[in-house]
Image (cartoon, rainbow, N blue to C red):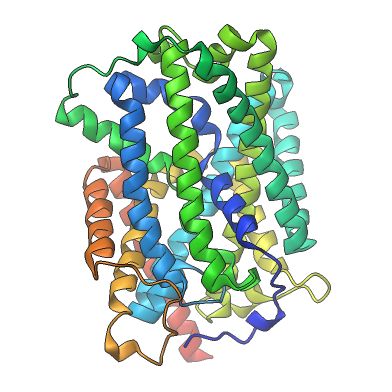
Length: 434
């Protein structure tokens, strides 16, 4: 059983709904406010059906996460699962990709936040003002993370409510205004169109894989992590499907809209509706930023806690019980990426990184069932039915999506993995010399 010595110093204050809020914040980002147009342009009236279908596929992967996650109570999530099942090198690659993707995603999403703010404050999008604003937001989120996991959870919960309320209002007021004729399904789209839409949606559902990462700061994580994983996918599927139905049924010319939710809201909520949706988009991206800050720093902390990178990154604040060095370093890297624009290139890595984590975790769920692991890792508190069917199907789904990634995404992912292998070699050599 993996039992890092520093885990006892972390404060276990996250409940099941705190973890669920972290998951929702990571999945429902700014994309939900523009995605209805993109999906409708590809598959038209089939889009709500496809959203539910991809939600079910994501649930199979999340269920595999839930079973293997119910064996562990330490920080790290997929990194720990891979280490227990496949050893140090494979785990390092997963942990490295987890952290790298979170840092790049934080930089990417915070630039989206600046773009939203620029709608009302144009000066925020350029020059010194943009740099200072990026630094101020990143520093604020880092400080909140340092002050304690409870404080971080309060902020995440508040931002989750702040993003869900405008969406709930959009759904509640939009459903009665729907033109049923606009929801006509029509003939089945071509296989290529279905594949393109499914690929777009599976990445839109991504982010729930961070839920197990702060397990070392969770109450009874072997039960709360599985709950949060399942509830996140269920809630997100319902929200995305209903938002798509309202957008389809109320906005003529949906496929050509660049701000579909705001444009639709104007029609049945008036001018104030667009303002509410814009505020929701700002809250959504800010919440996603907070989640990136929390999960990214904990991924780095887990690598240090297991001695795969310098132990300095596992240092905990004596006062707040938070991984202060990991938080500051992750924030600094994200700030550099955000201000230089390098995130736009590195964002290509996230596509492959997410799938690497999916495959590794689902494979770990299968491998840790073997009798040889009995006694080395705890038995799961949640065991999936149907034997190997669900994890094996989840692996097939993830690999199918991987094969559909663009050449640029595959190349970026391969380079990131190669960089991880080089870092691992350096870490091993440094450890031997020490």
